[in-house]
Amino acid sequence: MTYEELLTSEALADERFIVMTAENRALVRNIYAHLGDRFIDTGITEQTMIGAAAGLALRGRIPVVHALASFLTMRAFEFVRTDAGIPNLPVKLSSFIPGFLSDGNGPTHQAIEDISLMRGIPNMTVFAPADEDDLLKMLPEIWKYPAPCYVRINTRKTGYVHAPFEWGKAEIIAEGTDVTILTYGLLFEQTLEAVKILKDEGLAVGLVNMRSLKPVDEQAILRAAESNLLVTVEDHFLTGGLYTIVAETLLKYQTTARVLPFALKEKWFKPSLLPNVLEHEGFTAKQIAEKILGYTTNAVQSKIAAQEFSE
Image (tube, rainbow, N blue to C red; front, side, top):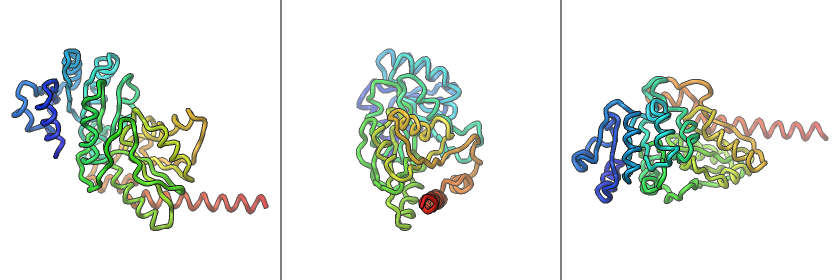
């Protein structure tokens, strides 16, 4: 099943569903034939689309809106905040090509601050599926939730079969005492491979799919912090994303951890084909594993040196 097939099935089974787009039909190009008047294309008017969606939600409908991630979260931000967030309306935001998935585009089309923006809105929930399987398992629960939801749409196929989605819960892929990697979305693919490389090097490595970023699974973060090294991997700015969520959680519970973040630091990524983007920005499985190995090796050497000095 595809995203479009799932949404079509849900909409045909429940007349409250309204499918909307701001002239971005990549995910929903065949739905009009099935829904007729319940499919609305407002044109390149993201603000108008959100305002109309809020009005429909006030009248008992469930609008599922589609636009490019950068424009849905930034051009229409004030409308999302004021029209959907503050009144707590069930507007469902399907965010197309977020993060590195906008690989061929420059800064204007790169949504790498979207998690930060959306999780700061009152009542908004935020999700980032790891791949298509994860997406399809999460969406039915997200769509029926009676509040606004932001979803980083990810239809890539990885072959990994995910556990059923539990509201506000992370998916624990593996547990490890040496290193635990927290990630979400597209970069799940790379971290899954990085774990294999690290295990071959003899490390006990954990991996957590942070599919729900708001509400966030605080206990999963606290358990990960018990590893010798906690690693966050995200195609997002360092500020406001998973690294910040981890910091907020650790501070809330008055604890700490050694944390190594992989994120974009005060710069946009170089537009290119996705494999080249990952390589250039240092997010391939090999690069992630090598940096973690270097970090853990240096930490062990420093610990040994400190012990020798104290003796």
